[in-house]
Amino acid sequence: SIPMLQAARKRNSLNLLGLTEAELEEQFVRGDGPGGQATNKTNNCVVLKHIPSGIVVKCHQTRSVEKNRKIAREILQEKVDLFYKGEESDVYKEKKASEKKKQEKKRRAKENLERKKLFKEMQQLDKK
Image: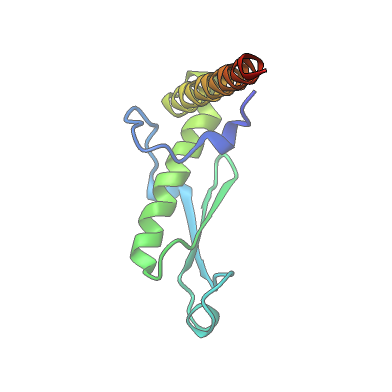
């Protein structure tokens, strides 16, 4: 089973629950990770909390505060949609479909590898 909130951040989901600014609590903090002085001196990491559900999102993907605010809202909207709709959420269904596709690709690659091994064994037997 897929952890519900890890399925978020899929682009093609259109039917998401809306968020109102009154339900959000926003903070700007110093980011972490690589970046040196630029990271240590600027508060461009956005921490966004959805008060009714208690879901918190931290976004520090770009240097721009405005871009981080936008990205944080998108991520939060998807996570809130997952929280309330569960398995009926488009985000969850999309994640499930991509996981199934990935498993199928992995299975086919494994089958091809087995075929190659058998072919090499047959070639070696023919040489003897």
